Every structure is written in C-alpha cells, then in structure tokens.
Image 1 (tube, helix red, strand yellow):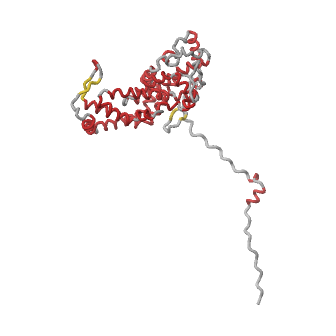
Image 2 (image 1 turned 30 degrees about the vertical axis):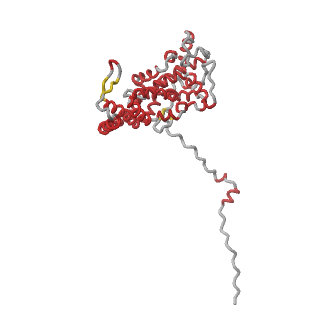
Length: 381
C-alpha cells in the first residue's frame, strides 16, 4: 500500500537496488545491453591503471603529497579504521574517478538505453494499463502553494540556477577541489566531498528521475512546480540518496540504473494515492496533516481507505499492462514492437488524357515554326 514507503522516500533507492539484483526480468535485459561495452571499458581502464601507474605515482609524490611522503592516513573510524600509506591513498583517490569516467565513456549510449529500459520494465511489472498512468493531476492539499510566473517557468532549472552551483558540479572543478584544496587540509575531507555534491544535486536529481512520470500524466509546468513544492523534502531526501549512490566510482553507474527502478516504484505508489483522491476516498489534506514529506502523516489511512484501495487495485490490474515505448540506439522513442518503416504516401496519378481541358490541350500543342515571308522574284535584265 502507498503508506508503507511514502513515509520514507529514500527507501525507494534500496528497493530499486534490490529489484535490479534479484529480479531477472529487469536485470537480464539491462545486463545484456551493458555487458559488452562494460568489458571493453574495464579492459581499457585496467590497461590505463597498470601502464600509467608509474607516471601517476610520480605526479602524486612530486605535486600532491610533496614533503609528506612516508606518512600514513587512517581511513574509517573505531574498530574498522585502516592505516594506509598516504601516497597509495592519494593515488587510489585520484585514479578511481578517472576509471569511472572511462567506463562511462564506453557505455554512455547503452547506459542511457538501459536506464530507460529498467524504468519501463518496472512500470510494466506493476500490471497497470496506460489509462492508470495518464490520469490528470489531482490536488492533494487543501491549501496548495501558488508559484509565481518565474518559478513556474523555471521549475526544471532550480538545480542549476546559480552559476556557482553549476561550476561546483562540473567534474574538473570537483577534481580540483578534492585533490588540491580539500586533500592538503586533511586526507579525510575528499571522502566528505560526495556528501556536499549530493546535497547540491538532490532536488535536481529527483526531478530528473520523475520526468517520465510527469510526462505520462501530461502535467503542465505550474502543476509540476506545485507537485515538487508540496513534496520538496521527499524529493530532496530521495535525490540525496540517489545522487550519493551514483557518486560512488564505477559502482555508481550500476546504481544509476537501480535508481530508475526506485523512481518507478515511487511513482507507482504516488499514482495509487492520486487515484484515492480522484475517487474522493481521500479528501485534500489540511496544512496540519500534510507531514514533512507532503503525503500525509498516515492517520488518514483508515480500514475503509485500505478496502477501497484494494478495489481500485483489482480494477486496474484486470486490464492489459502498459508497455512504454523503448529508447532505441538512435536516441528516439519508438514502440517496443518494431512495426517497420511507415508506408510512403500515395503518389497522385496524372490525369487521364480525356480529362485534360481542351483549352489546355490546344495551348500545350506544339505550334509549327513561322517561316519568314518569301521575297519577290528579281526582275530580269
């Protein structure tokens, strides 16, 4: 039921990772799309790490830890703390993001397709028809926030509105700050940098992951702004966990797929709650009932509401499941079943000879050339 995880949206990132690992109907198509490109990327990354180890070690000793060679750094806390050589620690912290970017370069196109495929397969596994996902937006608050015109127009740009945020999220800037500003202050600070980056990306990441959901509901910009504003802390918490997982070197690429599954599961629960309001089973929430995540505090879910929700679930589950369009290699959204190219439009046949007007026929008829007048004969001498 919707209230199980809607009370704690970050749990959907765990649900997505669990389903990707344990559900073969989702895992197999994703692995099939990424397998070969991943092998090539890992092979190139391994060769880069092996043959470039000496050069990187010289750069680390010469420029990064100059004067501190031989020191050791403690990674972890308490009984799980591990003492590591400072040069080796710096080398690994510098190498792992590079290997992750190399791997992403090789699987970038296939990764985009795999993400969309995971989201679509998750929607299909819910067993709901297309009409279930295309219902209009229903307001759940008795006093919804009202956006200004500028806010409604720039709803999708809030994550990068400030120029300094865009600069901070640029990967060369992250490497510069991590290696040359944070690391000289303390070797443990680069480990905390992903937390700050995830905090800046939180809301934008969650909005991006739910774009297919908004498009399916045909929501306008003002409705999207109001939806996000009412649930901004839910989106911030989910986006923070999703961005933090995607920031893990190499493994973050796998989590970027599982986060799509978690976003689809969350969208399914949100849409089931929308149907409760559409059927007037739940009434718009007063300001004291919305809760921190904007979806109520759970007290409005009575046994009558649970019974009505089961009836709605049985009604929609009896229809054929919706199969969303799949993203193909060319980057366009095409139906999952390839029906072939569309037929060419019929070519207009030329009119019959008898249908040509007489005037047009006469004018089109070729006229004989006009000869000059014949000269009179010369008189005889």
